[in-house]
Image (cartoon, rainbow, N blue to C red; front, side, top):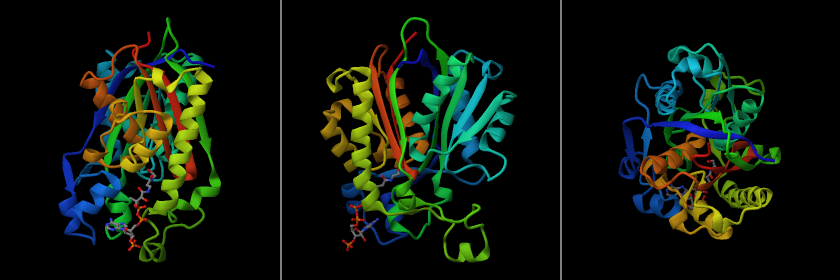
Length: 328
Ligand code: UT7
């Protein structure tokens, strides 16, 4: 199973605000040494007043539409992947679409840090339904749901967005294989408990800090390495492609040690692995597009390269996709 879909435009957005490890040392009981050694992160970018998930999404999408040589009216469908929506109702795409001037269909997707790869696959399938241009966006403001007093999460997460325009290909299938999955038995490992139908927001939930993200870091870590290796391997097997033929491995930027462990097991040396976690931290659904499009823009990823993206996150979701960059 392949899909005649390719990324024909791309864009990213990072807020100007920076939080360094030194800034965190002043706020919680941590150290630059611990954070660098245990996560690989040196700084993360965070939104300031007036910046939101939708504003980052609009910036990334504007670049992607322009890079594709299109105007917003050419977009037939938009999907926004986020775990930090603009607000509970309506969906974030409503705000993004209004600013971009879109009136096409749009919906949000919550597949956590696997979100961008999920929407890559869903977007490609919508091209098979007859759409010409599908805009997919991964946008997050995790700083708005992180407990500033929780040292295990505040050191990891950052804000950002990545967007891509998908279009059908005529010559070669751009999407060679994919794998999507979710193991809900791990749902409690990474969650925001309050604010939904199960535990509506109240003064008590705020008092109990249940509106913040909670993570069982070690257990997520263990499962993450396993699911990335399994999902990436089955994607390669479905395409009949060996890891040695892949030019770039683009893992979700969750922790440098997860990236290294999964890369080692899959057979990707650091030279073939795209990493930007040191500068942006873990940006959930924005993480894979930020790492990939930085490498496209600086010329490392070239037309014809095979690119293997693999993400995992709350749910616990996972998603991998093997692309041929520049497929026409
Ligand atoms: O993107 C979604 C998926 N999320 C992830 O993939 C995150 C996966 N998990 C991780 O990245 C890691 O588990 C963490 C970075 C969150 C934690 O690293 P770890 O190596 O698993 O640390 P740990 O939880 O085993 O804790 C080791 C020690 C503990 O102290 P004791 O009990 O040994 O005295 C922690 O209390 O490190 C302590 N610790 C810290 N120390 C300084 C935990 N966080 C910090 C901190 N600074 N920020």
